[in-house]
Length: 221
Figure 1 (cartoon, one colour):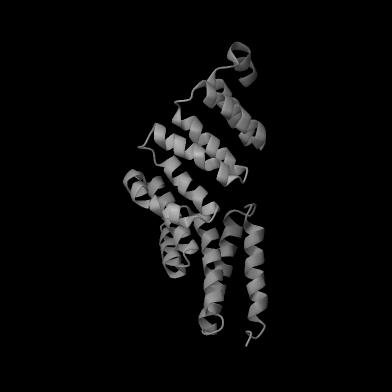
Figure 2 (cartoon, rainbow, N blue to C red):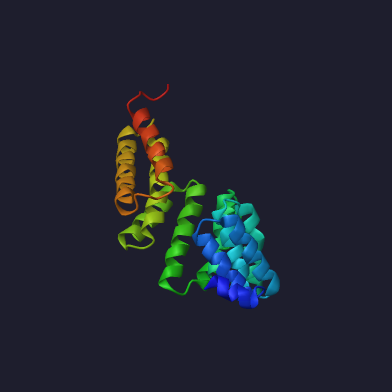
């Protein structure tokens, strides 16, 4: 279908966008970005195309290069939730949580659907985690998981939060630290059951395993 469409109108932005989405699904992210960039050049006032360029940059693990595209999408349609939340996520990827936090009032106004509000809750939990407000992050994540919202990403972040709480409590409150580590193990086990091919699961396993090992050693004096 794509080849037929390209044969008829190869420069059409919708055809180029279709090509980009197909290439993205095939994992060919560089080629997908090039097609999306051509589509955006043909239709520069299309906020959705600007947002897609940012999304592909995030998938390429280049969040610093995604920021300008999300900002462009927001400028083209200030009412959209998705590019604003993606912009906050990009800032968090480069450890600029202060900039992400500044976006929260705007995100609160734009979050109109249950899906929007679930994504916003995850963003808030990530901000709290990077601010080292681990208790607040944990509380928010547990509430969202209990309501079956955005479960896999929330479980992944919860593992990181509870590993952080283990580190925080290990020396002075070892019993509390042990409980946090056990909860991290349980959250990791749920991810393995629900999404065994999750791309982040090995890093999470290493984080938990490192702390399981440190728990068997006496804390440094």
